[in-house]
Amino acid sequence: MFFQRCVLDRYIISGGKPLYGEVNISGAKNAAVAILPAALLCSDVCVIDNVPMVSDILTELEIFRELGVKADVIASNTVRIDARALNTYIATSSLNQKFRASYYLLGTFLSRFGRAKVSMPGGCNFGGERPIDQHIKGFEALGASVDVDGGIISAVSDDGLRGTHIYFDRVTVGGTINVMLAAVLTPGLTILENVAKEPHVVDLASFLNTMGADVIGAGTNLIRIRGVSSLHGCNYSIIPDQIEAGTYLAAVMATSGKVTVKNVIPRHLECITEKLREMGGEITAGEDSVTVTRTGRISPVNVRALPYPGFPTDMQPQFAAALSLADGESTITEEVWDNRFKYADALCAMGANIEVKPQKAVINGVASLSGASVVACDLRAGAAMVIAGLAAKGTTTVTNIHYVERGYENIVLKLRSLGADISLVKDE
Ligand code: EPU
Image (tube, rainbow, N blue to C red; front, side, top):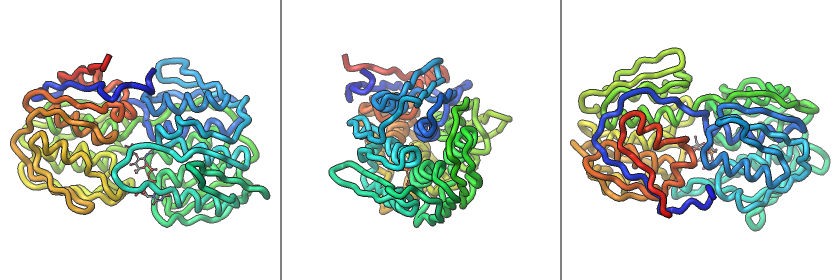
């Protein structure tokens, strides 16, 4: 079964080969995990295309089926969600602990049923807390009473939710999305201020509007939602994955070569490609593609991970892998998560020189990395280890790859098509 994939499954990488060619980028995982539960807001059928078939999505569909929703993969990246039979607001399956975005059922159920009971979510553990106080603040402001007990979050509004003005104390992607979901069927005007502006927040708003919602301002600091009485089914295609595209671009910087990422929105990649240029990469953007060429040694840079449109925190581990090979000292400052440098030990085991300080990694570039056996500790950390392995001399084995498979569709096939020597070995 997909979910029980053994932790000993591994990627074996014979490094040192430049990457050349073209790679199709899949739909955005972090948009899909929000849009699929949004489809449960209506008692109707939604057909959603460009859904990445990664393990987080397969888990989410499994949770929906447990709730009585018909959730069918009707073509390779197309999902049909029929939520007409959904009549429960309780989602306390153990599957919820497998990924972070399972908590989007809170906003969805609150909106549709006026109450919700959902298990605390799981997801990548970066080593610090992953609080949900801003989600709760938003639900309470809309009129719900929220209680967290024994790993279950319950939210209920006996008198019905009402639109209101919510100012988030800090920018949160999950908080913005969950409260948007709760507000779309809530009577009155809800104004969300100091919200996340990530492309996946905008994509969710577009999806909701395609279902008949009235959401304006997504992509700015302020989102205005006028509650509607019902939503209808629709057909929708998810935006390309900014982080998957950035990961392939970073891999080329580490290995050298020339690769075109296709089916992308170049504007979403600018916060990444600007840094790649500074590192000495040659970047050309087409209408829906970006090409990176890297020949000489990478120049060191300073990276600051910030909410969008800043440099994405979900790209800093992959950049750390590339910058390990830069000609001089680079720094990565993390301003989104309290601790996201757990990957540094693995890169150092491969010969990188990284010193981790509070919220900052100082990377002194080395001339080459060497293959080693490393253990992925979260999704993007695992991607960084794959990139380091592609660039290293000798053989690298990455275990715990279930993390990587949560967010990268067909990563082995895609890298092999670019000339990488990587294989997936299953622990039979
Ligand atoms: N935070 C709070 N209170 C809250 C919510 C968040 O203090 O109520 C803090 C967090 O602890 C963190 C910061 O705010 O320090 C930002 O957290 P955010 O809520 O934005 O993160 P998230 O929604 O849990 C999503 C992505 C992450 C990505 C972050 C930041 C999904 C499913 N996950 O997480 O993606 O790192 O936004 O952009 O959308 C990944 O894809 O590898 C990944 C971890």
